[in-house]
Length: 315
Image (cartoon, rainbow, N blue to C red):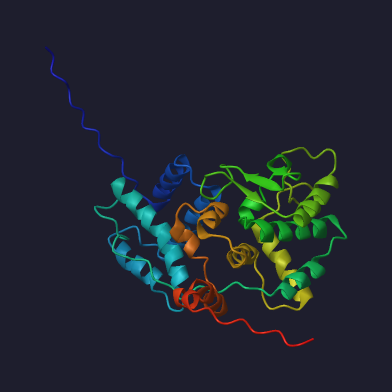
């Protein structure tokens, strides 16, 4: 009986960070990482090695420490940087470039209390007045503004919706798994007023635009990027005389209004497309007044001793 031959297969470790980055991005893409996530990895890792050209060496840990401890950066920036560096260097270690990950000992920072996104209704109306509906661009922006505020959809997800994804009659939109951030499809719903505005936008599309052209596209039928949407909102903010308003504010505003109107956090989690409840809880930055009102409704002592009703005066 022949003995089995054992072949020593040695891993071909990447010799440069560029080679490792190329392999890392290919590996993450094969895992199903979204294009925006891949772009984020590439941008942050290239930024790191531009600032520290000698980091692909035994000094890597010190370079990472300097990058993360830069003066003036917020905890959020620290965490964003680490979210790219940690998986990259874990991959590099598995590929044989390092004996142990130089980023392993660094931890995420706990940031400050999240900013409460609670725009007054008057400000929302001012934004809509500033946008208008006179042109295709302003009609699109008004429809997108209402749709985002009404459904809580992520900007990147909204801008990839196709006409076939939206059911005007049932007032719902399907977010395909291929375009969802978490790669899990879901359905979001919207009001009758929003449905009317979105339907109006779809009706003015040129006949030659097929289903591949997104609902919220440019006037040339091209993709409308999140960055351009942010720039547009900045212009409307100035026109409305407000201080600040970001695309993601609409998603935050949806969450706080949803809870104020009696929605529960578990349904909210599904609507927001969060894989875990802890992700949803990050959005629950309720104001002190919300907490006070919630306590008044839920207090067991208040339920035991209800306040007497005020008597009506004589007519």
